[in-house]
Image (tube, rainbow, N blue to C red; front, side):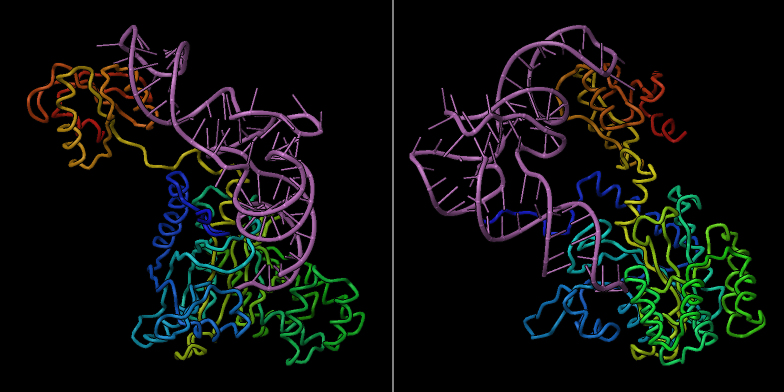
Length: 437
RNA sequence: GUGGGCGUAGCUCAGUUGGUUAGAGCAUCGGGUUGUGAUCCCGAGGGUCGGGGGUUCGAGUCCCCUCGCCCACCCCA
């Protein structure tokens, strides 16, 4: 029999791992809800065609796909956006706008695992549909930043790098690149750090740019503008700030400052995202050191819902994966030793008579809503039992001796605070109210 | 898909030029002592040395294939 092990690029979640995953997913959920998003989900597999709509045939080799007994071609979801688009397209006219949805699906991609990338991972998706206002873009970014803060990260660790397709298009136009070649220009821009300078220059020439303009194009793409300093960009390019083509990015900047997250944000026109479907704002969250792959990425995709057969619906959103997020938190020393739930109370017996009352007292405490545990050991050795309680990371220990009554809640016990070490005599009927303090 | 590094117990690792039934610490489980958390003492379980094939009297050790992990590419929805 072949060795039975978790498939390549997947993870087993033992209690500590599961607690950590929950730590992340719970934070995603908590932050989403307080930012006004509703949770949704869809099937973990969809028809293969759904993924071809957005990404073409080329996507198939990246998918785990199969044929069911009805000869239907299906695929495990590699992303959530097509499902989201399908769901929105189906009920777009009935849903109140703006639609603010989030989800935390697990996704599978048939890629070779490496740092920051596995074959199964969890991804936080946050989307606002039905509004083309820059405030929606800003609220998505605010929500992403809120999550980072929630997990203890600060602007010293991460930066939201923001660009805007329309602004870049406007600059390209100013430099003399015809509109049909803008997509090629985006691709070239995206690859500029991966290719030789000569190849970049040649690519730029193919777009109709001469030597001087190539240099200018490259220079602009390498500049960063802090929030509030977009004027510098306009000046250097001779753009009128009142020009409609830059109004959008200017409003976004104003909103970011209104939300109070300007210090996290920087405008970097070199951020392109490979995705052809982004139409306006695009952004990525990067480590300030620039080392790792992007922690999150997103942008505006105003035409996607139509592509999936829905009405024209502007949309903006982002995704954040658990793998890179965990890497970042680990690097920054923000991973707690153990995130498994701690027992409120651990019940032990120091006498045979006390042992007879353990189950009933545990039952009562549990019915009162407490996380209560006890030991299966038969020893009356208080030291050993306290060690069990301590190992379980319990907050309190209830010690039952000869003073217990015949029924739950009767008689006396002792309640020990494991953190402080203090111990008090207590009537068993008063334990729950004492624990609530 | 391409290239490099690495696989011995749950974890961290020893294991001589190929040579008896492959070891240690920690962890786990059981027992004992002090009945109030560190401990201390005794004991147990756990490895087809990632898997398969080959060379050899003999392979954890040498050769080939394969699987997995890590890293870098490709790609990144």
